[in-house]
Image (cartoon, rainbow, N blue to C red; front, side, top):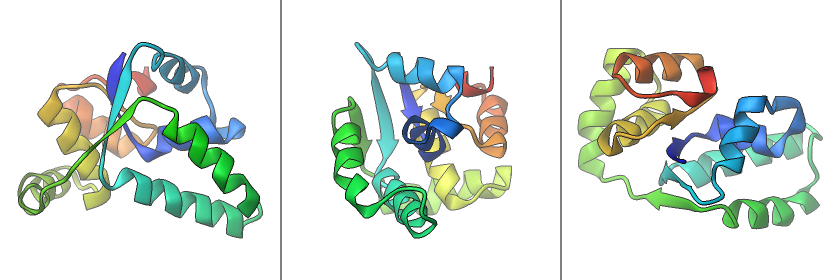
Length: 138
C-alpha cells in the first residue's frame, strides 16, 4: 500500500502503547509498498523523540536504533516549496482549522491523491472532507 504517513502513526510504530491493529497493518503494508512524508516529518519525529527522552519514556541511547529502524522503511521525503506552504497549506490550515504542521500532510495527500495515515482526529476529518481515504480511522 502507498500512503502519506504522519508523525502520529510513526509514533504508534515506535511506542507499543500507542499501537493499534490498524497502525500495525499499515506498517506491514510497507512490505512492497511505500509511504510519502513532507520534509517536516523528520523534524516532528525528532521533536517527539526528544520529548520522550526528557520524560524518561526512552533513553538517549535508543535514538540510534530508532533512527536505523525508521531509515529502513520505504519512506520518501517530499520537499515542501515555500510557495506551497504560504499558499495551499496555509489555506487548508485556515479552512479546516488545523495547524500548518498538520496541513502540510493534508496538502501532500491531496496533491498525490493518496490515503492519509493519521491518528489525529481533526486531520482525519479534514482529509475525509476532501474525499481522501484515512485508513487509520476505520
